[in-house]
Image (tube, rainbow, N blue to C red; front, top):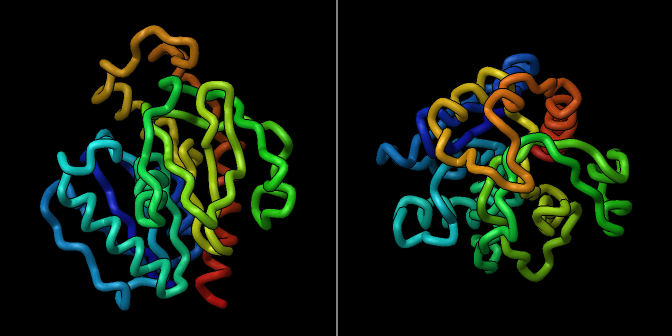
Length: 231
């Protein structure tokens, strides 16, 4: 299987997604759209992962290359290939499906719990998770909910934390992929985000997180999407 991923900043990493790709011996390729790199044709990959970034999907006109990504997401969905969006990527999936991204009621940075919705009980992935579980956050915005999308989780700080469209398109506002080294790069490059707030942890707290169980959930989601790509 060939996985293509899109990155939006030099300090944004695949984290444990890279570990999973290597463990399963999948082929992979990536596009750094912020550098002007050209996106692939959908015939060149079996699954698409759109990562997070400092850009805002609320201000698409400021980042013309994000509109190119939206078109690629639309083409990938129409081709019935799995798509995973994380943070900014989740918001771009929402846009691709016809819903505008919005500002989150709160900025969230750090490990805080999300709670699944009633619809999560019928979801092939989220029904495997507990009613409440910890995830890593680093965001200001949240995805819009397009027709046909199902909201799967929310938090005290943000009502739209995860959604599904069809059986192989998932958007995660939170981060399950971040590793300690990836968080260190985030802290070094986005320290201005760490203002005081109800849902903002300190740099010291962020650099001492145990992300083992969080990363395991990322692998579970990737296993499911890989199975869909192979079906």
